[in-house]
Length: 329
Ligand code: KG4
Ligand code: ZN
Image 1 (cartoon, rainbow, N blue to C red):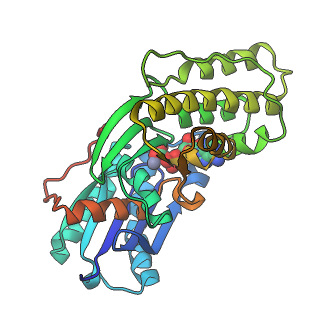
Image 2: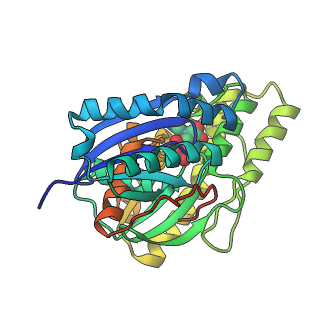
């Protein structure tokens, strides 16, 4: 079979990224321009600034991705772009750029769901991984427990009813004065603390999640007791939030009898979460997989991988493709 080279384009939030992936699994280049330094001073992503930054750099990032992959636009089989979910202005930069490129080069345009992209990061890290499996997607914007039945077929078993877990991490970081983006900073500080503070656990009658209660509890605790040890707060938050994840996943394993669990999304980089899921793997005698750290947070290689599986199934978009900020899985 002829090799397939997918160009992935990702601009859904604050990373401008273009990647070339061969046959869905082999990353030839994955150029990421992070805007963290710019948004840091505002304590979070400013959507208008994110869109402008994407516009300024995307063409150069695309050229660099081709150069690093040592191929030209002619060798590209198709252009895969994130069209949702995400910030509408940010998404539109990638979508418009991809449409222009597709029109100019007459290459097929493949629309990709960002959440599906996160799952697909695992196809790059684990070359033999194939559906079906269970997946827990934990990121800044999403918390989903999913039965992945095929590359493009999903059943949502549970989702957050309010905040995404990454939002809670970022909020906790802000409250204890760690700055943005908070997840990695909470991860680091928690290692120096004890999980000795009781926090509320949301009890659900299904596999849904809720992180607003624990987030509010941390805000109130820190406000009323400013002397509380910040490392202990971070460790206690991580322990309770992870317990909520593990409880539902354990139920899902029992319900579905699946033996493979795949984590995805920025928060799956968290070292405590990885440790606890490794424990779960041992206890339930299942296999738990994680994307390599560089593929946990937003990047275009995961979009190109997802785009490959959509492409070979014949999925295409035309020039009417629009950004869908609240696109569902
Ligand atoms: O997947 P991602 O890049 O963006 C979305 O699609 O939302 O995830 C970003 C989120 C942020 O909330 C960030 O704080 C969190 O992932 N994150 C972490 C860690 N690294 C990134 N959270 C906890 N521990 C980490 N090590
Ligand atoms: Zn993401």
